[in-house]
Length: 209
Image 1 (spheres, one colour):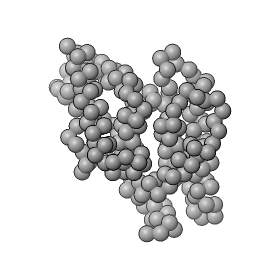
Image 2: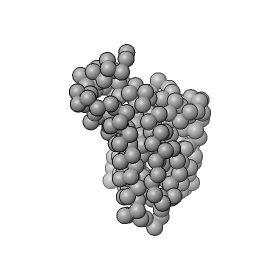
Image 3: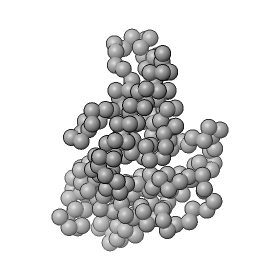
Image 4: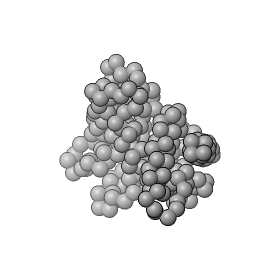
């Protein structure tokens, strides 16, 4: 399927699978923007942060692009990617947090779906970190406390670990797709995901003892 056919099919039926194909096809635009743009004195972030914001900008560009306007997608997407990164950086500058966290991270951890069903899933999900019991008031309170502890624990992960969780649970990408985006092996993605889930489980177990 060539580019024109892919866009025509996506605009006709914007499925998640077609969007993934387009995202993978144009992810090099994110790398281009991150490596070739100047973002002022925003040195509080590393490359993976810029990349994550860029992926969000690419996603928005795919949703809003109209091939009938005659503009090349690459031109449109680069503007959206750069604009998204700058918008997020401004938010960080305007709303500094004492603990170093940002509105973006807080939003992600509060809205992310903790459970995934995937062919490449290794048997562990974030949803399994928090036990499931009968929803009594006491259990609800305990779960809410556990979720708060989980959010704090996730914030302590390194950038690559958080990026993999973000792409897997928030962007709904498979291990194969994450491996392609990050230029690492599928087995490495699986290893990092499993290691992170086990670490989070252990941390919550210690905190709840």
